[in-house]
Image (cartoon, rainbow, N blue to C red):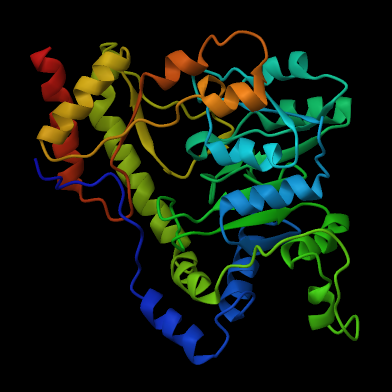
Length: 380
């Protein structure tokens, strides 16, 4: 069966090609050109963070955060097992041991009540992951971090334009990271950003991002030449990628509203199935403003999910499941440990199914997906 309704379509606004040509004409297509600076400024204005720096990916932004947090061999980092591999890899590369804790079944976010029991004398940081652009319980997490003198690094890969109690996701902890991968609400193909909350950490972040040099200070005229001053790597994206992204950031609210309309259409159309107890719909806590990064449903079990995916595919719609919990993977067993019991992580991950969601998703296509889901359950 030909897929007529893809799972994802990278966003395009119409200005991307013009801006890329503009970047090429400027003869400045490497890192930190005019479009990179515009993107950084937009993020800073939108989120009110002290400093934002565009990176080659959210993975590299997380690696930067691990470097800035001075993660060393023997340190422990607490995070949910239900996340992408990059969340853990950034700290494993620094020699850390990953301590996984269970998730909440309502939001699929880290269970804040399980964190404290996972803390040891070796714990260095907590890494909450804002799944589906829905904020973790950050007040509680920040209180725990403060009580134990721990760093907080927010994985807000899916959280651009989302907030918790009025604060942009990625700005509450010491560091936050965004993703601008092609599957995200705003895209540059491959790309990300690191958000720095505190002024004292801005210059160290610039140094790490600039291959361990003080080049940023040189460009500002603060030193007469730049040199190698610390550890770092090359985390600067091409300005052509930034040009593609900026075309979307200019109309970020329009894209956000479009996605929220699609999310609401799914929710309202599938509510009768949820009321009958056939499926479960996403939960958005009252203190959270989400960004419609994804729309998912939860079904009975993994067998039912596989059957529903096949049924949707027969009707020309692509639907996918998400992460296989990291603690159950080969690398997860090697580099990490699960603290406490896995009550919800595996069970809930096996029930979750993501539906097509992207900018300019047609109403008729949402209706086709919904009708296919309703038809599947009528047949059962």
